[in-house]
Amino acid sequence: MSGRVASVADTGSASDRLQALGLALPELRENPYYVDQRTVGSSIYISGQLPYRDGELLGQGIVGRDVELETARELARHAVLNCLAAAVQAVGDLERVRIAQMLVFVASTPDFGLQSRVANAASELLIEVLGENGRHARTAIGVAGLPLNSPVEIQMVCTAL
Image (cartoon, rainbow, N blue to C red; front, side):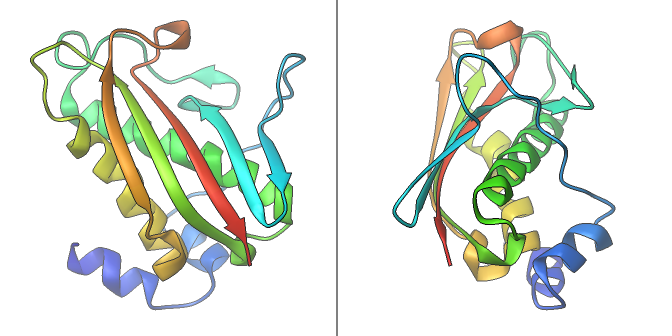
């Protein structure tokens, strides 16, 4: 873990840390076919989130062919912000969110092999914002394609504190 991740995560509230990073949780648009999150007991299941900002998909293509690694990492950060927004919908406050598991899908070429580096960008952001509550079990997997030709999709399971 980088020194930056540890130093930012040690100060202020999660909302303060998010703001210090120059970030804000986005407003999620409703979908008539599914919900962004479902709470069962203290568990919060977050639907797969794409890297949308202000209703616009920020990238399309296959990582390792059309999309560079650093671009995919930035897209993963946007997707995980959407996941956090869904979690806050469920519990009302970022301080009440603990990430249990994250599943990162990366649309990539068969020989790409760096899906975990894409996922690391999302993991780093979670730790920067939530501190120890952002540490999680994780799977990063390469897939042939994702909805709307998105390079990245992230699904999560959280718990309410």
